[in-house]
Length: 136
Image (cartoon, rainbow, N blue to C red; front, side, top):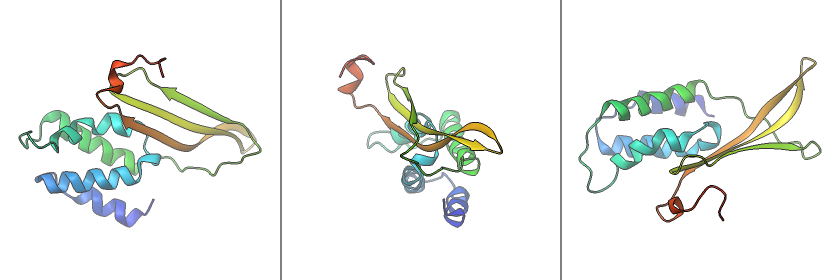
């Protein structure tokens, strides 16, 4: 992550719809670095809809602050090693968001740990929300 761009994005206020759209675009660019991004930003994306009155509620303010927190505490992503098996964690329990994480086992200071290769999350389309978690 480019720390200068992160710092600029974190300083923007949430007083206009254009600022929210710009912030969401920036956050979306780094979506592989932030776990559960789609879940966190769902309220802010609804705010950007055409027929919604621009109002920063407590829930939306919390989402904005949480994204800022996640940017400053995002894990360092590691490069994939295709000789070692990957681990994938998938969460489709929520009917509005699909989330996954791709991890790799590694040895750090003689201790086995799992490092994050990337996070994946997106909001479910209305038509997809009608299916169960196990249906394709």
